[in-house]
Length: 195
Image 1 (spheres, helix red, strand yellow):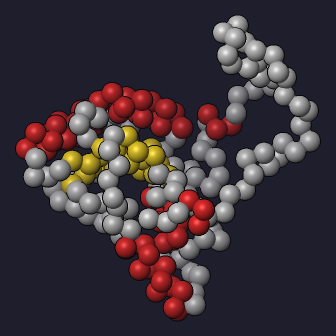
Image 2 (image 1 turned 180 degrees about the horizontal axis):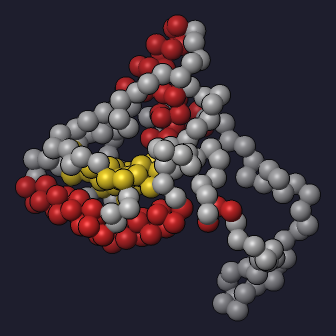
């Protein structure tokens, strides 16, 4: 897995360089700060921020893992897959895999989150209902100046969010594509298997 310092990070304060100092006033709880109000909510409530995909693929993939040789986990995962399909029919829900696929080390099923509202509803729900299962939530980004395999590697590692036990992904698929592209001297997009 790559080190988080293998990547570059723009300043989180980009665009706020000339903003006035923040107040030091505390809220009624005595712990949190009072923040200056702008009268408008962040646009991140309505649309995923760049470079998250606001198109067909959606901003986030959610991979719900289970150990396919564990009868109890297999049953729980199958029931959860059905429950998700019934309670969240608006979400894109994929095949219930009975074996590892792509970089995923064990069986899983995948759910796509296409809007911040879907993320805000589904992730808290899943925190309660995932039971004994591990979950990878990774962003789908669209940086055009970064080759596809490099984006996928970063999205599945450095930018990943985990619920439960973190499972080691087989990122060799991505690194092999990166090495092949470097040997070829190209920067064009390359297709990858389901991620």
